[in-house]
Structures are given as structure tokens and as C-alpha cells.
Length: 210
Image (cartoon, rainbow, N blue to C red; front, side, top):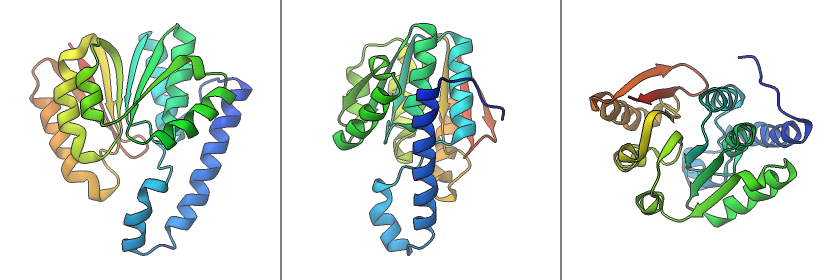
């Protein structure tokens, strides 16, 4: 996928994230299954350049002013969403369980000139989402996969007509596929949602609220 134009400060921060992801991928290949499971929460696990680019483009084209990210992690996708929010005069609300991750993300957003475009909510994602009034016109779901269906159930009533919902990891890793299938079934069962699976990055489900 061709890149979208971002300024030098944003590109530098994205490049830093991607370099870290490459280092961690090399480390991951040396870990046994038990150690990998123990250390997974330390890893960046970004959506990747192709998915980030698509998120950025979709949010800009939709003019999405109220963006929700469910699962900030270390903030790679947050940067892509924040850059789009700045372009359209919008804001990102990003939900993350661990404060240390949002601190890491906040520092990089600051260096990218995007800190004012993001508001982090730290805590349990389902509790945070239940407390948010909405409405939202663009959503990224990318947290522990067993939470995708309950997140969608809480999110669904908070969408504006035409809202886009993107869920990552629909194809890879293989271990996430049962939860991915459950999420896709829930979205396709909602009569007011249209949805398609796209083989971009680790696979995304792109859904639109009618």
C-alpha cells in the first residue's frame, strides 16, 4: 500500500516504533512458547505500516472528528489516528489498561506534535467504554481478542450513522482466530452493520454502521 503524506516529526516517530518492532520480532523468534507468553505484554505488537496507513486514510476521508481507540498499547496506531484527527480538526480517545504504556505513547505523541489530539483513559477497557457517552464516528478495536465481542456490544449503541469500525488481527496470529471469528459473527449478525474482511496487515474487519 502506498504511504500517505505525514510531516517529518510524525515520520520520525513512526520510524522509531517500526525499528523497535523489528528488534522485538528478532527477539521473539528466540523465545520458547512459555517465555513468549510471559513476555507478550512487553512487546510493541503494532498494527504495521499498511494498516496504519489505511486507518489514517479512512479517518481523513471520513472526516472523523470523534475517534475511539480501544487498546492503545504503546501507541503506534495512536500516532496514525492522531495525525488524521489533527488533519480534520478531531480528537482521539484512547483506552489502555496499563499507565506505563500510555506514558510511553504520550512522550512519542509529544515529539510528533500530536499530544493535544489524544486523550488517554487508563483502566479496564469495558469499564472505560461503558462510562463514555459517545457518539463516535471512527473506532479501532485492538486489545486482547477475547474482549472484542463485549467491546462491540458496548460500542454499538454509541455509533453515529456512517461510523466506521475497524478490528485488527482477524487473520493473524492463528491463535486469535477463534475470537476473530466470534467477533465477525457478532458484527455480521447486527442488521444495521455492513462489514468486510480485508487482507491488510494481520487482517482487518472493516464495518460500517448504517
